[in-house]
Length: 301
Image 1 (spheres, rainbow, N blue to C red):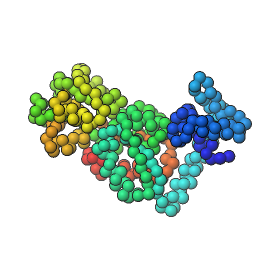
Image 2 (image 1 turned 60 degrees about the vertical axis):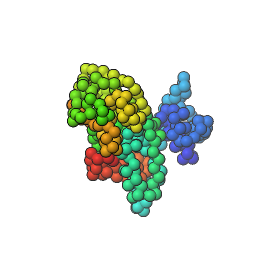
Image 3 (image 1 turned 30 degrees about the vertical axis):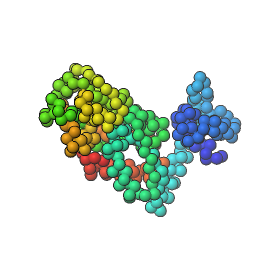
């Protein structure tokens, strides 16, 4: 029996979708269907029930899936064991990060990791936090780094550091010389925010729900921290952003940062599937990132 057929079956069974499996395996959907048909012919039984554009495992499919899970765990153990003996750490990893983290915090971490492990190739995919969690759920990325709480209890979520969010205004604004501002007072001004699905937007909404009865007076919704900062600099409203994203603007005095009362913080978290990592390189990256967070604390990653 070809390993490729079992790998395709395992992916379809885990995702319960031929389309998502094709995307994950970088195959066409007809090719995935062909591999499953070949495996069903090999066992002389159906492995999936297909009804109303949905699929489910048959009893035989459930049994094959259980064995396949154990087989691929053994493959991973074998590979990691041999690489541990040889000291070899190589491979290709795909990491997903929400916009703020990808633009302002990951570059130095990945740069240092790449210098230590030059044989590991890392591909970075950027989306909002909701999109990154979806990629982890569908196994299209090995590791996600997000800036909002993760509701899926089937994923492993590990906080790597805390991030402070602050109000930003242009230097000419009425609030510009304040060291801190009550959130209710801030909301009296037009508010510029990120798009729905953004981790920053979600955290702000939860914060307001807990500490303020006033609603956001949203004047603009923008798709990146840079766009939000530019709009605030132009005097189009106020906003709340990660302090880590405004270091340049504070030095140039094009923006002023004001601490919120009550204080607003959020976790930056690693998120991944519960099953063991398939590559030792992935384990090394996560361990490296843990150490990096511990050493750098509240600094940029």
